[in-house]
Length: 529
Image (cartoon, rainbow, N blue to C red):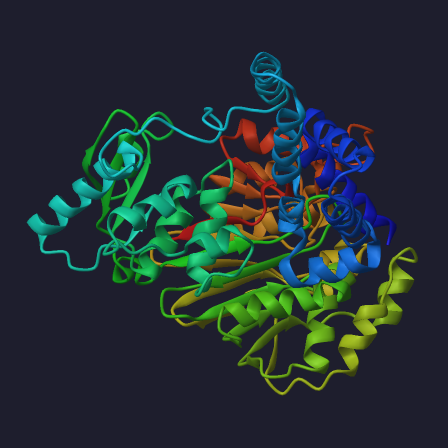
């Protein structure tokens, strides 16, 4: 109740502004109350105002009203205050009771001055803009729509679907209803878009940093044909280099035709890293192609299960393959929880490591925990396939090569079996690859580098053990990755205490020319071509 009252008071303060108009309103009410004439009108104005404040400020009734109209628009309730009626009526009463024309004109001038000084001109720049054309719409809107109409006519494009900045969405539809958009005002008000692709387009367009590769992927999946964006925020060469054509523009916006279709991404996979910016470390990735196939890697903690369920649900609720790198709680927790009650989720295949027994893991590393591992062992997973170093397998055209998994050689090299026995694997699409190091650490670096060397090279890399205390510098340098994924929250990425090596590895990868991704900007996405 206290929070509700606080919210009402905050909205009232915003509505009240400088307080001058409300002060005038209450002064008028007091004046009417002390007058001896027309008692019924005095009681009407005062009684209504008192009733309004009781209903709108009492937490129980305020909360009930918010439940009906929404908390974000509750401030509109203050429009029901009879401020204009009371002040106007009082002004008329004062003028009528004045004796003589001179007094009345003087009072009228005073009242007009009071109204002017206590009020705000409604015809100001924050409410109204000078019209730019006969349509009374932003000229940018008119220019963009005309450019699209002309280009569509020249190229025989009948389905005109535009992605643009959120500020122009409403006016675009007002000018040309034939131009469709992946989402509208309802999404900007907090409602979900009709499709997951549209939701992701909105997410990208609403963020400060734009992942253009991911945006173009979702645009192709959604069937969007045009893109308009501020000219001073995006160089033409950037989109032209991604097979988009500039078709026009004005001083403020450039308009591009998105020539990439859904089929342009045949054989490509969109890889997404999920994570908690301010919370704990975990590991959760999805891989999806343009046919709707889905691969999941790990998933995070038991407490992440509901979130993982929701992600998989919006991506079709069908997992072609689920890779569980090792049974630590920040990797396998969500999977073990979901698999107990999968509901309508369909999981075709599960790939995992035949890890050492919980007893051996704890004996080897007394500080370790095996709670989730023990839950994993209780599961009956008919579609489970254990993998070993040197194994290969394929999922819907995506090739997997396993470089590390628990085996005798891990016992000989490591005193941290659960981490060092986790699955290190590389996924390869048509041209590019990504190396997943899971939680493999320092003790395995030399062995893996000597055993596989060039086979480990990849375009992208998921850093060992979240980028903290993982593999050696020589190992990371040998990969030649263009981007490095740290499965780490903000506090771990920026720690300067010396306890963690995350920052050191960040500098290392940046020095090697790799783009660094972490939970700071999650979800992070790349297209594996």
